[in-house]
Amino acid sequence: MEQANREGALFLPFMQIPSGHHHVADALINELKNCKQKVPCDKVDILSYSYGKLERIVSSSYLAWIKCLPSTYNLLYYHSAYKKVSENNRNYIYESLFIYFFKRLIKERKPKIIFCTHALPSNIASVLKQKNKLDAIIVNVYTDFFVNRIWGSRGIDFHFVPTMAVKHHLLAKGVKEDCIFVTGIPVHSAFQAKVNHHFVRKQLSILVAGGNLGVGSIRHMLMDSVNESRIHYHVLCGKNEKLYQQLVSENKANVTPYTYIASREQMNRLYDQVDAVMTKPGGVTISESLLKRKPTFIYSPLPGQEKINAEHLFNQGLILPISMNHSINTQLINYFSNNNQQEMYAQKVGDYHQNINKKPIYSIIDQIMGW
Image (cartoon, rainbow, N blue to C red; front, side):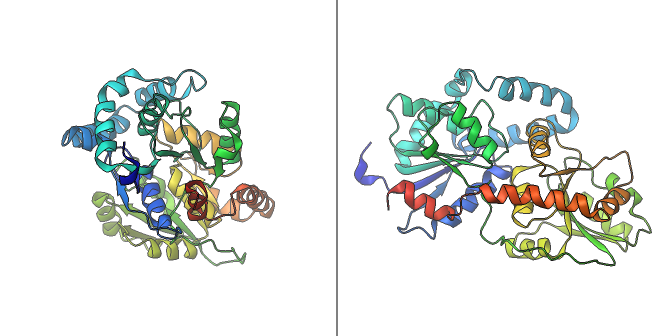
């Protein structure tokens, strides 16, 4: 590989689904605009790059599997990607499917630095780096609150981790401390931290997320909101047009549905207007809520990553579980009526922020690039 031609940054998510892998890559691309040197950026989904239109079939099948057979997906994910995290993470099936295309991509783009926002590209990069067939700087950027066994670790140069717990996990695996940066899961700079001012509102305002891909049920959660004047729900329907139209037709005075919001600045303002967030435990949404220091209530985690995220976040006191078997309104009102519970939660979120690297991410990138 010719050093003279290498100058850009390559971002590697997986699949075209607008998931956290893409959001994190986009956030990092935005960060690089502030680096000391201008860096050309390129984001490539290795699945569609390798197999073209087959990616659509894989993506739709993936979503259908989670929706129709959640228990089987959860079981397979737990045993294949999570349970044996301490064992050798070579995956010869992935390698046989993607290593040729990965090498071709690197030869075409000649990146100076590669950001892996998904475990599979990280795994392939790790294999090639150990064989001295890849000399770009490799950075793992974790998009969940745990590390599954597919992520590469040997040969990976740097790690952007979400929490101190993940840092300790990597240290136990032999990763050097100066290669690990506790950045949180990166979110776009349009989301600005804001100090919460506690005051009593006549009506609580709750942001409800999780309907974007049509997986899971938000309407069931709002069933008992009829004639409830103490809470107003702002529901993010995303690209779930069916959910949006249903909520519009129901025309509840205390429910405001939103279609897909493309503007991050608008989303930032919406966060500032609400008292709390109800969502599924996806990495990016949780990180946005933590940045805004909003109490975050978790409902119906999807199988696989979300269930494991929920376990880790709950153990760290960073989320508040919501039971779908009891009144949502009552659970929310009880929390906001309990000052001790609110103070305990705020303390846990404060501890989380205390451990986040104080340098902006672009400054960390300057550091690892030697600028």
